[in-house]
Image (cartoon, rainbow, N blue to C red; front, side, top):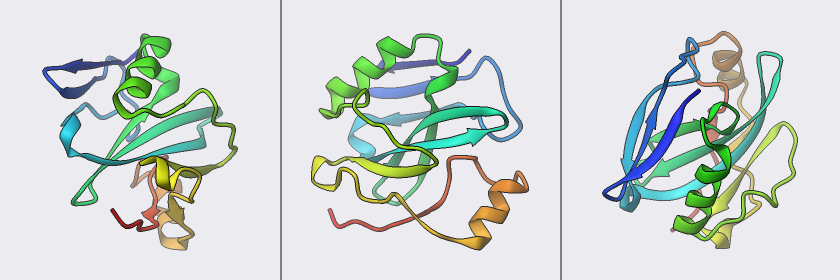
Length: 136
């Protein structure tokens, strides 16, 4: 299981188990987060939910909600930090913006055959995609 925590205004993902491309440790200051996406995807044979933290320079950090040591505590932390409601999201096999609130529900990714191939061949993260740009 993976551990997600907030330390001195820095979000940190520590991975205990690593898939070949799904669980990569990372850290990101809260101030760097410009947008957050929610993605529901099949990850192997698991129907999985992910958060995608997006920085101003469009770098993405993926968080698998299904592999968290303390799911409820993590969701509560993120909901409080960014004033979002993760529990209220009910989507299948797609991604949407959940933060900022003004962009809630808009598609996170564009359709891309090249990205689809890269994900299915294992070159890119299962919850990755080509971002639909939104204005800040």
